Amino acid sequence: MRTKINLLSLLLVVLMLSSCYKTEEDATLEDYDITLTYYDKDFKFDSYGTFLVRDSVQLLSNYLSDEEWESFYTSGDAGKIRNKIISEFKALGYTEVSDSENPDFMVNPVLTAMQQTDVVYYPGWWWGYPGYWGWYGGWYYKNTNYYDPYWGYYPSWGASYYTYKTGTLIIEMADGESVRVYRQWIEDNGEDGDPNDAPEIIFNWTAHVEGVMGSGTTTNEARLIFGIEEAFNQSPYLKK
Amino acid sequence: MKKLYIILALISVLGFSQKASAQEPDATGFIRTYAQPGGMLSFDWIIGVPMGDMNSNFISKTSTRGFNVEYRYFFDSPISLGGGLSWQGFYQKYDRATYSTDGIAITSTRFNYLYTFPIYMNFHYYPLKTNYVFPFIGVNMGAFHIDKQDQIGRYYVQDESWHFGIMPEVGALFKLDAHSGFGITVKAKYNYIFYNENNYNSLSQLNIYIGATWIL
Image (cartoon, rainbow over all chains, first blue to last red; front, side, top):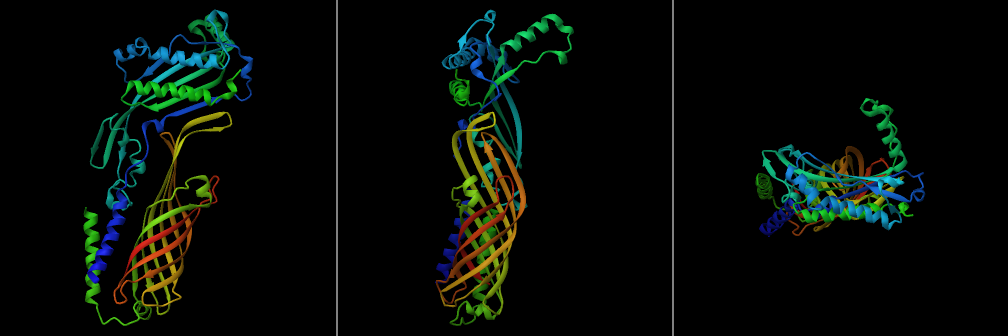
């Protein structure tokens, strides 16, 4: 009887211990995509009628090779993003015009593609924090092991280094008149002008579509296009 | 692995010590421990159900990630005093949704985490004495370390802090063998953590403990 009971108690303890090893989290890369918009609440968007989207998407990056950079424009990625933005504004009831027709607002899309390296340090288990072996990993790991296909993962004693790439598309809606005043100021002052005196460009609406890049270009692009849709869905006040 | 060896060693020591002190057990079982001061050590698995503000504002999902270790010292009366510590992890994922406030809207997935680590004192009273079932009521109080994280997308805000907490308790110890020094404990504690931050008055959970208990 005693043996049986001791076995039972052992089983209980083992059950308790094994529950500490739970590491799975139900997160996918897409779960980390963020779409954020902000706007001037006092502005009446229906006072705008015409718009122009800048001729191409500006690209900023700290890791892209010259070839990749070029391919962004030649492969049609930049064009897809631009066209998506144009069609969204048209669907809201605005009319696309050329620069010479003095659009009411001008849209500047900027894509930043950044690579960064981070380090996580795992406290030694003897420090006594429960669940070090992965349980607590619920958050220590949240930026690492789900992305194994996307970035290198170099465990060493007590610390891990990892790199990852993020992509952020910023869509700025600038007041057309304020842009024209600014351009005039640049023309008048040239390079000698004090930037502090430059007239302010007014942004009434800004959207950020951000995510950690996956390995599939097509998937990344689809996520970006979906994010642009989300940005417009978030902003019902834009509708004319 | 090392951890496992320590636990195994602990168990065997406990097992042997029990045999070594195998004086003829009297029919009263645990009652003996009231008369002869001694202790009771429990290891429990915790199932936690979020309550109150925590349930409505943060995490409503039941947690099965938790363990507890506690010790009780019996006096020459049906009461015991002791202490313990435990660890619990709560987590909930909220599907992609849009949150708007004052000119800003954000669409993403939210992940909420709460890890609690209480170190507490306990007091218990045992109203009934039978050979197999020993019900008790008690109260625990102590310091709770909180690690609370609100995550949206891959960004999170973390609050790590200490708070006072109180845990009223009811439960029972079940012995399978009246003569053995081992039993199964089932108990419920209402964890009330005094957490007066933002839109919270408290963080509270109803916890069910299932554990192994040794009379030492």
